[in-house]
Image 1 (cartoon, rainbow, N blue to C red):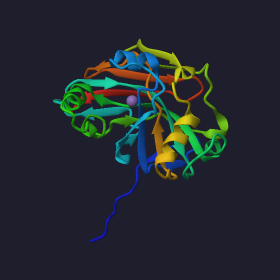
Image 2 (image 1 turned 45 degrees about the vertical axis):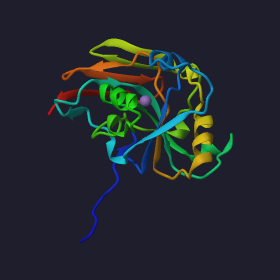
Image 3 (image 1 turned 180 degrees about the vertical axis):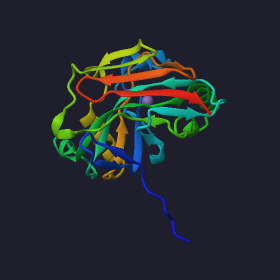
Image 4 (image 1 turned 180 degrees about the horizontal axis):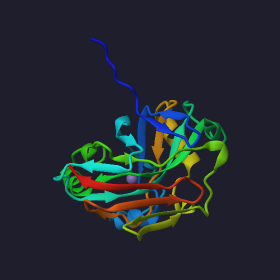
Length: 225
Ligand code: MN
């Protein structure tokens, strides 16, 4: 019996694609969001967790189980690696990036909090089907993150999250240095770099627009299965 599994393929604007190998995420990388989650922001080493590669997609209609509980939005800058390595230094990481995208790290918050409170892994609150929507990818040569880039998210036209990439506690380069100090990064790895304050619930039928200055917008609706 053969194994016919294929990695999810994300699209660049020019029609080329990006095969996803693994999705890394960073927890609490904006001070105001750390505070809203009840944690003191500081420069302790960043927290990393994963989502399965198959959670990443560019669908504009996300269908979730009706009983998924409190679903929350987290808008994030997503970095897509075209090459990997270990112990990436302050310059090396730049030429490993194939592209960037706007992403939303969908989270089952009530499940996450319940698992955390019991000291259990909260994998299932983050790694469920369709939990990592991203917009169209932009090649790294056409855009570079800068401190004054605005990152924001609206639900049904109302702004909920609004900050700047300069508010990240750990920069993209610092995150890749930290992560590659622990393990080998590979082509096809994607990194969700953390969310600013203002995370909140989504209801079925909601329309989500996520924007980072200079990147293609991410736009989707959620509905119940
Ligand atoms: Mn997140």
